[in-house]
Length: 325
Image 1 (cartoon, one colour):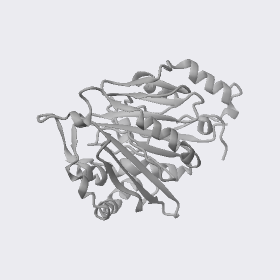
Image 2 (cartoon, rainbow, N blue to C red):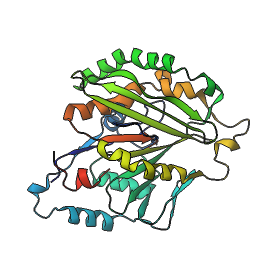
Image 3 (tube, one colour):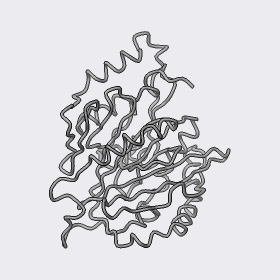
């Protein structure tokens, strides 16, 4: 039954990479980010965006079935149902009945259970069906100044992203990953000054002409950025958009942690909104982190979509519970 591999990318510090993923529709979302104690090999995999986990084919395991898998996951982890998920010391997310929440410790174990390098998530939210889930990661990079919100030059930023294709593709080739090219905006960078959310989506093209969309949203805070990553199949994205937006709306920074509570002398990230989009030297291997996973998915032909709200990334029914090609 397990015909697919789960590819999950956990955002590390911005100095290492941008968290993100593959999408195939225009939806608002965000990204995830976190620090973890990784080996050199694990860190390289994360920085490259090459974190994937082959799931066993249930045909080789007679005890495996969609019902058994779901029951096992529901019983093995400390799912919370009280309507408020605490995301470390930084924020919380409110959710309605029908959803289940794991704290950071349990979320990390969950990711290991499905054979993925877990990064250091601060929470995980899923419907009780486990059809999809959202990972929350926090990047304590400091306060990101939004003074350049009126200077988000989409044409210049797209040019910068395209200019980085050559370097990023050289790195992908060295790892045996298919090249990818930045084609155009699916959604030009936009910033909501009321909610302090930054989002954009880029259309990417593989050498054989196959296209995908990388969609990102970042929730700015006083001390850093909360990234959410939603994982689902492309055809499910439209139907999940409303649910996903409700999750975003349910996120609140704790007292003293919101973007509006910044005071002079607080730690600064040292870059603004344009840098978050363009990447470049600030992120080091950002483009590889941003697109490397997509290259892996193209290479394997997996039609997954990872909406990086940031922060976020699914052991869900079609991936895990018996979807076939």
